[in-house]
Length: 179
Image (cartoon, rainbow, N blue to C red; front, side):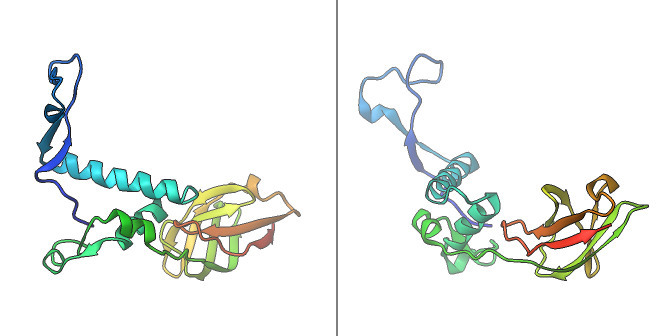
């Protein structure tokens, strides 16, 4: 999705009492150059931690969206990467992302097969059906979404609120359903 530095990155060297550790007292020996995806992954993880510290209520989906929205787009990277860009910590911290709010228009429940069908718009693939306070995974089936919900979640004659939650945390207005 993005590029991150992975060649000749200056990093700290291990110090202390281990076979690969430096025993040197000279501070210039406390650093080394490193290459590879392990270095890149550490940099991306560091940016994710930085973004999480600024937006502590963001879930993983929103953190990823902020990081990807904040890249520096570089023309020669565009054919190789979804974002066409390079990791940028300041860009990730400043990125504005919107939360998508699904619209739940109706529900249908088949008690015999314990299938809850949800209809609406703006629903993400992988959205969660919230029945009362319990979440159930959904699968897209054409224009509708299907969730397996036990009959016990719908006591006879009792109105239960149902809503949808997209992966980024956006939620629909609830619909009250009575079996």
